[in-house]
Length: 451
Ligand code: GLN
Image (tube, rainbow, N blue to C red; front, side, top):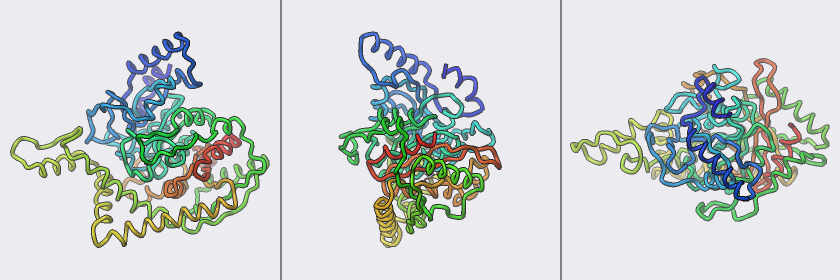
């Protein structure tokens, strides 16, 4: 049924880069065989899923939205991919994304943008716009993404779906193509809070193959999603997250959601996190620094594209030609910024200062979580903007992640949940819930109360 839905609608939405119909049907048949053999499988056995094209899946094309990986078929699968298949989840294919997860609109994909199913002229968010759009278009009931600065939560917000960034180290990064390793975190996307929690449980947990994986039990997210009980919960509204202000409809739906939580027995207080004002600036130094290092591996020798290798050129020339042809503008911009920020003489001034700011942001979270159980804000300052609107203005694009970036900097858990449509444009608004590390269940508890 979902393959049929993709066939009918994806020509207009373009959520998928690769539909693996044959693989999906074979996986579904394998699930039937396991059940027939008496194996007891979890609640998601047989449920289809759309996978962001940043996760490796053995033998299935994986591009990270980039020309430089066009045609590459990974020889192995990510831990998350293996866990999904073990749980009997059926992988429908790979979804569109900003190149190497750099962007907030999916317009930086080398394969053309994804369209928001709510209004095809608008962006589906990014970088995981394909995953969220596939849910909003009912092309898949489940999806997964990765969140480095908001790439699960912001697309969820603008497509009226649920998206959660687990605690850093809660889900394995092994086999997930790296953007900025100290910030990247795989997580679940779904249309309901319980679906997201079930998927969270299926994909999370300790992995010895990831050196930053946390060796602790998965927080009780499913129980929290089933409960939704927020009575007595202390909820902090972060004063500093507004930046230049929220769109009126975003502000309105956010305030109404707070009223709903208050009526459900939660206590709402205002909390100050003064260093959040510097989160965006620090992120745009730390992230590109890690990007410049991680993307050094695309040298035309090891994977995918190779340009100009006709015997007349040096290795360096082939590398330069390959990277020039294979990387898009935004990727080049970040590699250049990161290389500069890490260069000797500038390292302390840029990368070093940004790391200090990162510590102060984490301290702000610690102080806030000493007073409240969770923090909330709108997930993103505006609803889905028009395709093309921010393409010539990187700073305007970067501001889409004003509210989501602090949680990546500190490594805590955070999710976005739909709270209705903005009256001025009829587009979805999302509310962000942030919880301390390993308290991911609180994110789902509040999400369930809002549903
Ligand atoms: N939009 C942010 C960026 O461009 C976040 C990306 C992400 O979370 N992968 O860096």
